[in-house]
Length: 294
Image (tube, rainbow, N blue to C red; front, side, top):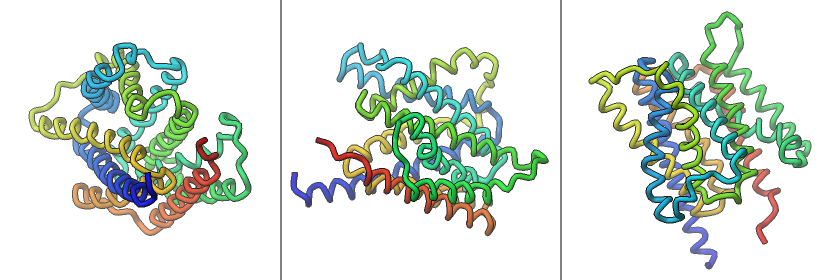
């Protein structure tokens, strides 16, 4: 494949990534629009069941029924648990926290991966990346501004989302060669649905008629968005595509303003800029330092 073709694929990957983060932010906005009428666990369970129902018929047709058994089993289950905790905390966070603020706080995830990679991935982290982690966590503090009176509880839940997403991304790296990208995404939904099923009777709330259309579009958009996210990385150079995930803050600010009349204040914007700059730097630096495939 010539360089021009590779470049075209990478630009297509960027376009699909931007579409993916736009759709994922719209999905989060629809979840917030329900106004806390449903438990985050119930919302996530319905999302995972729907995604599994969409993905697995195709995957079974392509790879055979043995694809239903995740391999390696324990790491795949751990990754599924990580995304369950991450997304359920995020859905709880956005009930009381502006969408842009919560989304920006979640961007702590790349910093978490860098901080724990020496322990879990046996990776060397140099002075520059450690400096980016420290500065990035300072940016998170500007967003959180802890007052310990319970008024910013949603911010800390969003921070918890970032921590669990960090573990999720770390496990993604460990399992990078275990399965194709779409299979990995399906495993997360499949395992998440199984883990959450026992809790459904305790959190079940019948859908209200005025929410039918919201729920329908939430399920469609979340599945299409996840598919686009997976597809983007398969199209071109991850070094160039990955930083565009941070464009999600633009969508979160846009939807937060037009749908909920929320807009980050100056101090929050300062924290957002610091976290994004550090996250982009770490993402690009790690991709450059990654060994080239043979």
